[in-house]
Amino acid sequence: MLKGRHLVEPGDLSLGEMEGLFTLAEKIETEDDYLRESCRGKLLAALFFEPSTRTRLSFEAAMMRLGGSCLGFAEPGSSSAVKGESLADTVRMASSYADVIVMRSPKEGAALLASRYSAVPVINAGDGGHHHPTQTLTDLLTIRRLRRSIGGLNVGFCGDLKFGRTVHSLAKALSRYPDMRMVFISPEELRIPDYIGGGILGKAGVPYTETGDLEKVIGGLDVLYMTRVQRERFFNEEDYIRLKDSYILNTEKMALAKKDMIVLHPLPRVNEIAVEVDDDPRAAYFKQAKYGMFVRMALLASVLGITGVGGSLC
Image (cartoon, rainbow, N blue to C red; front, top):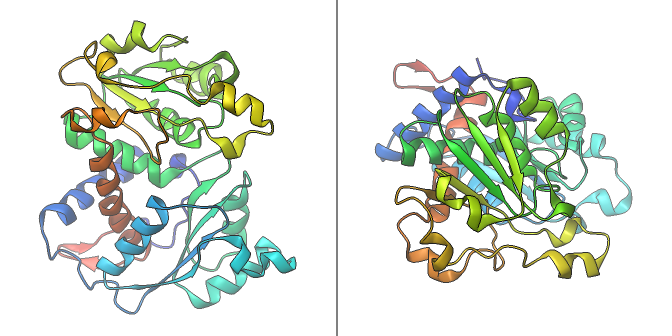
């Protein structure tokens, strides 16, 4: 049952619950009128203390396509946080107005804290370098749709693996599927944290390798997950400038990859994927963004306990 539940990190959902959301998202995608207007009278509060385009817009689009409405703010300067209001008080207030809260914060653990003070479900839309569970649902649904299954894949993560919350969340989620292998491609300064590699993957028995050479390993990948070097996570501008162009995926590198490899990216991109790659049929990042709306529709309907065809969705 997902009705009334918080989603702070991917581990809050069982594999069965995630598969249920993916099945529901696919039904929403293929049946134009399915669940439309089912959330009429429901309100989503979008509390974004950090900039966002895709996540915020896809949540708002998801709620409106379900017939619901949205309120909230897109940056902290337009909230009472600038006056010193605590996160707990902001969440208490918002949960008295809305039926579900979607929140992004630059502070690790903010979503967990919010869930302890909210009277309605809290969905984490990203908390610092920790988790981004709905991006993970988006990534998994995209892999399922384009590769037909999630298990038995060799997945490469490239770029900022130290600060990349989407990488951390997805690697953790993929470790729960059978016969997975992972390759982490990054400069030494941006390598995957030990709690993911030796910790989560080690305990799950998932084999992984680390390298600084994308061209050396791209030929063996089924999925390549590109990420940008995140300027906002650096304390030193010189370090950012030195590392920001570490990897640029172009047609020459794509020529080394499998014919059925797919390229994912949580977006926004800067220049880590050349525009020329967009025309390659293996480039799936814009499809990925669209799948994000469908899986968020499924999630919102489920946590709100909407009753659909065949009974309760949750």
